[in-house]
Length: 149
Image 1 (cartoon, rainbow, N blue to C red):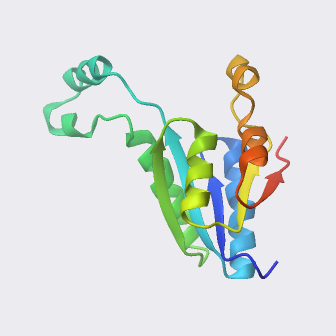
Image 2: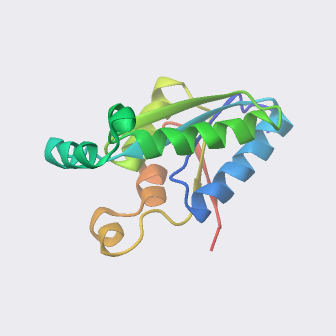
Image 3: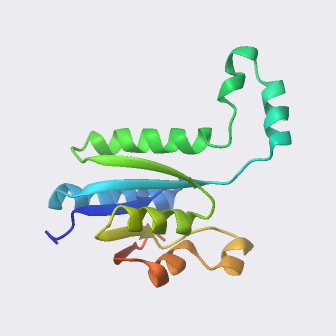
């Protein structure tokens, strides 16, 4: 266990992700590892952004962007992790959640990826293959799949 120096964990604010983050944080605290916290966001069309901005009060129009929810989730989760004495860096990446996690794991030379056993829900998961399934097949390091269901 002491060989873990960098642990990557993904979050989307879901219950499954929250449990994966909780266990990754415990593991990082126990081993002195650094956490790389990743969340993916989908690009939002310019038309939709303009519509949302037009509906927002003038003083908050600049805040309407496709990353705001992801950034808020990451920041809140990172604050919770830091409160437990673990060093954490946050990453917001556009696109597929599994690709985002895999990219950060490669870039940061991660020793471990922690992911919940439930990825995307609904039909999309069956078309694309679940996030944990994709990560387990393409990871540049060990993968810990947390059973959350």
